[in-house]
Image (tube, rainbow, N blue to C red; front, side, top):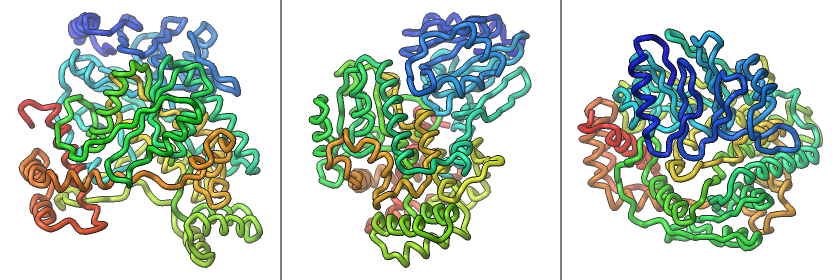
Length: 579
C-alpha cells in the first residue's frame, strides 16, 4: 500500500493493522508512505538502502545461474540509480520491484519480463493498493469498484493482446517488462524490456549448430536454477515436447519431483503413454488422473481480476490443486507458453524470412523443403505461400470476433500492448510473428488458479529462454521438417526417442462438446438471462438461434458460449447480489 496524501493516513494505518492480523501474512517492508506485506512463499529481498524491496525469486544472469539470496549495498545502489532497469541485465526470475523515491512522493513498480509474479493496482481514499493476490487484497481492503464493461467487452472481442485494464473499474495490471511511476496525481508507464531487441536482424544467430548450443545451455542452466528454489515440485507432464523438456531439465537439480498427467476417457486427449515413458526414463513418480466426462458450469469461487477459467480449466485446476495438497508440494511447473517461445509457426513465414535474408539460393531451397515436409504440401504450394508473405504484413493479434455479441460492441477500442511498439528495430516478417506469439502467451497466467496452494512457474517464459529463442531465425525452427526443431535437437540425448519425435497434441475438444450437450439448457438460460444480456453485450437472439439447432461438425462457434459463461461465472464470484 502506498499513501499518496494525508487524507489516506487513517485508512493506511487501518489496513496495515488488518494486514498484520491476516493469516499467513508477514510484513516485508515498512516506510513512512509505503507498507508491503507478503503471503505464502513470496520471498522479500529488502534493498540495503531502505528504499524498497524486491518480491519473489531472482537468479544471477550469465552462464552460471544461481538464486540471489539477498540484495547487497552495491546492488541496491545500482537499482536505485537506474530506477530498477539495471536488474533487467543483471538478474532474472519472477519478481516485482517496489522502490520509493528519496522524497517519498513517487513509488516505482517494475515487473520482470516473464510476468511470473502478478501485479495489479488501483486507487482509493488517498491510497494506491498494489497486489499479486486478488483474494488477499479484497479480503483486507474490500472489493474494488464494479465491473468495467468496456474492458470485459474488449476481452470478448479481442482475445489478444492483453490490455492493462482488467475486468474491474479502476483495477489495472502492470504488464511484464514494464515500469510504472506512481504519484498522488500521475501514472507514468515505460517499457524496460522488449522482445524486439532480441528479434532484431542484427541480433540473430547465424549458425544452426550455434543456435542449438545456445538453447541447450540456456534451457539447462535455467531449469537447474529453478530446481534450486523448490523442495518438492509438481510437474504438469502432458508427455509433449515442452513439458518433457521441463521435467528432464528439472531432474538434474536438487528438487524432488512428482508428475501429474491429465487424460479423458476418449483416446483423443489421452497422452498418458508418452508421459509414462518420460517419467520412467527419469525415475519420476507419475499420477495419471482422468477428467470427469460431465463438467459443470459452476461459478469459480476464487476471485480473480480478469475472467479466466472456463469449464475445462476449472476441471484441470481442480485436479492440480488436489494433487498439490496430497503430495505437499511447494511449487508447480507448467509448460505454458512453450509453443510461442519455441516459434511454433503454422505458416510459410520461415521461408519468407530465409528469402529476405539470403536471396534465392540453396538456403531458401532447404527452408522450402523443410516446410513441405512439415506441412505435407507441395514445393509449389510452399513457395506460393512464402511469396504471399512478402507482400502481406505480419498478422495482428487484434483480430475481431463479434460472435454472439451485439452490433454495438464493434465500437469497442482495440487494446494496445506495450510490446506492440517495434521502435527502431528491424525485424523479418516471420520473426515478428514469433514476437506476437510471445505477447499472446502472456494470457496463459490468467488460467492458473492454483497458486494459492503453491507458486505456478512457467520456466519456458523465463527471460533468458525468451531472449535465446528470439535470437534464433525462424527457418532454423523447422529444420528437417520438424516443428520446434532447435528445442528437439537441444534435448535429443535426454528425451526418449518416441517423446522426442512426437508432433501430435492432445485434443480436448470432446470435453467441450460433452459439456455443451449435457448442459445446453442451463448454458442457454445463463447466457440469455445473465448480466451480459442485461448490459447489452450479448445478442440473445443469436444465441437462442444457434443453440436451437443441432451442433454441426467443425462448427466451433459453440466454444464462444463457454467464454461467455466464463464471464458470467466471474461476475457472480465478485457480486452479491449481481450487478
